Image (cartoon, rainbow over all chains, first blue to last red; front, side, top):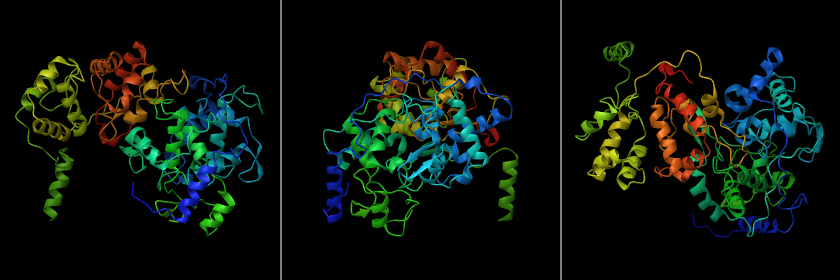
Length: 300
Length: 212
């Protein structure tokens, strides 16, 4: 890493990050032990046939390969499956069967009651860095059909065990870019690349971009260090999940979310104002300086 | 100029393809050819793997590992022992540059437990102990990704199974981050049989650019 001077912005970033470990912004208890998931989505072989089955199958295809099956709404190389693993089936990997039954719900992010479809629109706008599919579009109908089918016999409105990512315990030390850089080089760069760009082979994306122009944008949930740490600790490295310590997960999340990525689509013309309105918390480094570069300032 | 273009077009139509970036055969290649074939495509019946078109850094790492016995194989240890670093590099470059003949995809996409494991993995044991799909690192159709995730498509099932069992029993220690050892230890014998048969049946270079 380049040696850098501690400028005021950098100092602010460090102070913000340091302060985070005093109070969790949601007030949630740290280190909840995830309850064992008891729900099982239906087997692939049980997928219905007929017109509804076709919609479910298209939804699964979109989910597992979003750039191929929903290119008109996708602005990067990511697929839903990258963050909701095994086609949205896997407990503790934000499974769709737990999300589907949790909507409609109020979301602080847009201060509105959101339907499930509106929640999916958010994924396309932020995580996919694309455009929100209209609620009556074929893409949206297919994704809702697939999620509905995965949720067969799940109780509406229930807080399903295995929902989201398990909340990771507070780290012993404030997350460190420098330590995270080492964790990344040893555990992540094999697949995601030293430059975070991921990898493609034979015309298809294999490893998703974790920063840069082909990754999620600054409005995505994963651009917040706490969300990334939760996901990483539970799910990464693929095949070796659970091998990173709590501290390593926080450190590498801080490193990844200290890199630049596409602009927040809610950008108001000023990074400072956008930070104040949408990123005014210790878990987002948007609008702070890292290595002398203000994150979000370079339009990507 | 037009004549050159015409010549190229005719060559393409004739199935000769674009001129391959060729590397002269190092003298030791004749020994390799006895098992891996003059074209480097291996021997399905005997279980000798194809080397043609595999990434040079991967091939080089294997020669180093045979020599150091990190990858235990008596025959290959004997072959690698006398090779210098420069000779290993030359052999690796040579085989990496050998063309892989195009072959058609199976008429119908393979189904069954091997295909399911290769394409979807097996997550019944949960997020920490599940088996990621092979394709999620080796690419769709097992065609390989970058320099660290070699092609599986078209490799002999016997060879692929021996590798998975080698990681399970510790006779193959190589590979980045211990990933393959961790994954292989979660596989049942039945899964190994199914998934190696699946990849052995896939073309190493699908014809007409068809994607699996």
